[in-house]
Amino acid sequence: MDKIKNNVSAAWKSVCADLEKKLPKHAMHAWFDPIVAVGFRDKSFILEVPNQFSLEWIESHYKDEIMLSIKALFNNDVEYQFFVTKTKKVDIKKRNSSELLIRPRVKRFNNLNDKYTFDNFIVGGNNEFAKTASESVSNNPGQHNFNPLIIYGGVGLGKTHLMHAIGNNSLKKNPDLNILNITSEQFTLDFVNSLRKNRTIEFAQNYRSSDILLIDDIQFFRGKEQTQEQFFHTFNVLHQGGKQIVLTADKFPGEMKGLQSRLLSRFQSGLSVDVQPPNFEVRVAILLEKADQNGLELDYSIIEFIARHIKNNVRELEGTIIRLLAKSSLLNIEINSQLVTEVVKERIGGKIGNEISIENIVKKVSEISSVNEDDIVGKSRKMEIAEARQVSMFLCRDIMGVSLNNIGMFFGGRDHTTVMHALKTINKKQSTDDRMKRMIVSVRKELGFSFL
Ligand code: ADP
Ligand code: MG
Image (cartoon, rainbow, N blue to C red; front, side, top):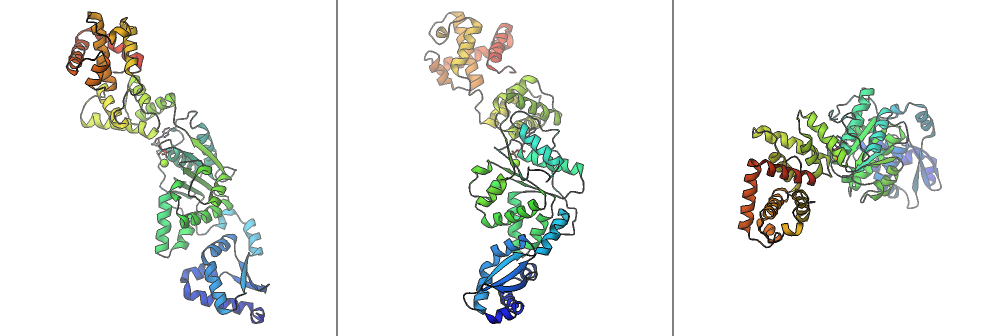
């Protein structure tokens, strides 16, 4: 022990020489060369490291190796203690935070989707707060308490759109910003590749030199301990340097499983905003915007029909418009009610009209035809009753897709050939008889299926 005290520097050098046999060259160079052994106190090497980040990195990656080397060279009681160099700490505070990060700063290519902007993001009560917070962050990245900003919520509700809009808007204001936009899977892959190729330093440098780091879908970090570790350090360096971090996730950070608690507690120090499914009016507005973007003119009744059926996912609304466009141009047909029903059915798995019941239809037909509901489902063959019954059967099939047998059963236990006959009769009448046409249109309208 005295031997160490007499020449701490030489003793530490011998530890490093031992470490060199076990660790890759670049690791020695990056992490151990800057360490200065400044003393030996209470049976411990006192070691200076240049910054907090190095300290955490070395402790989390090389602690065991260091202890093994020390024990191999000296006796079992010897330990070590790190502390961050004081003079450098002052320097760091004085310096502009961007200089803290690794240089040279090369403007990098970013893969922001320029279609995702704040201008074309439709706002409703479901996403208003998320949009306001995102805009505010993009106007002053890293400059207020919204760091990190976490946008969370279900699939297809605009999280990625908002994240890219933050990047696009920040870049418009300051084209020199380095914006790194990546999914959590890409981050993981990048990290794993850097491990394979012994390029973890470059990996760290790359991420830590961004002014705004945007990471999409962080729930995929779940269970990936080493990646989370990396991300934790990256997060800290950027956060301490006053750089903006924006993350998206499928859940509120407090409810995320499989992420380290120290990460979650960092997340909660910023601002979390949610996006919810849009209500009917917002869905209509989104559909109008998407139709417009795609140069498609749609009747309001068609827009309303789609908005009534596709509810929980904006991506689906958009997908329906694209699909309509694709089908009509591929098949070279007009966008008509049949095509719209077909496309909507495809997207929601054929459950069109599932909120409408047979009773509903009978009730509406009864109101419009002034035929009693009981008569409609009864046995009477009186002409106006039989007609109201046939109209009801037709609409049950057309709107709800009920099977012929089930329709027959509901309407007084009739067999499927009777139902088939009713459907044919009404189908024919609605194209030749104006009164019948008006009646069908009215019932549809009452049921929210006006466009057909
Ligand atoms: P998430 O990331 O939440 O799964 P996205 O951001 O990928 O969802 O959104 C899916 C699609 O819906 C995108 O094309 C996006 O532009 C669009 N979208 C979502 N919300 C809105 C909105 N409020 N206004 C306009 N388009 C939206
Ligand atoms: Mg997304």
